[in-house]
Length: 317
Image 1: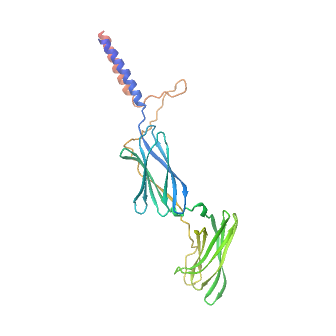
Image 2 (image 1 turned 60 degrees about the horizontal axis):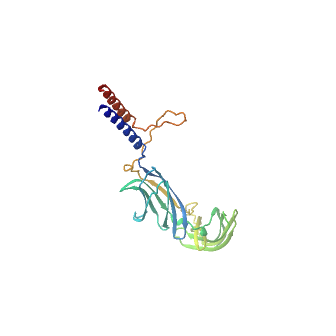
Image 3 (image 1 turned 30 degrees about the vertical axis):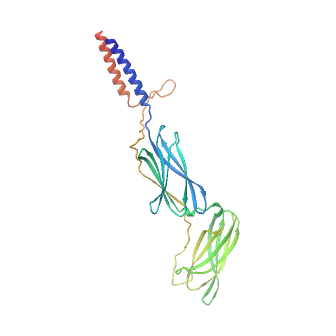
């Protein structure tokens, strides 16, 4: 009878050890958003299609969804939301969303497990209107500007304005040169020119403008393509000795902006395991003998208990 108890104890020890070994190798479920990259996929006059590449760090087993929410940046009103299931073994998801160019946006990315958000990050998209379709783009650089007083007749002054433009590609461009009275913003003189610009060369865009003396002006040069205003530069012309205007006045192009923001990761639902550094002996094959972390003590206690029970049984025999 006692022998049967000893055998049963040994069987229980072996079963428990095998069960612990199996469950010890099960990976705990976790996921978080590592980064979000974006690419302009399609562009026209009114909309921009942007593809988001969402990089995810995850466990091998994962059951969760990725939610993308788009808000109006000015009003914080939710405009659209998409939710997709994270596929098995997927570490990157590609999502394309269309945005109207007349707004700024806040875009939220969230990994949702059940009814909880376990990881989130976001982007702010600004100045989409500055993204120009390829057929309307102009790669022009302003190198210098100067003015020459040609004549003075009564209260009228004729000034030659010269803008030195570098073209990175060859274009046919329509230019609009105009003189605007600084304090009143009144257009006083202007002229339209159509010029062929050659790649790698500097083109002088010049015109005579007649203005009233003793006033200050902004001399503007606008570049148009396909009836679309693409670039604009301006410089000051000071003809009023007692009224000063800022030097080097210019119009800078507003660039498309992406601002990133990250909210704290909520990992309570499915926490990511913390790596533990361990040193294990090497086998004759050069590989580590990796024991199941955290279960050595349990197995040891069970083994000791089994040995004591076995010795007790022998004594009784």
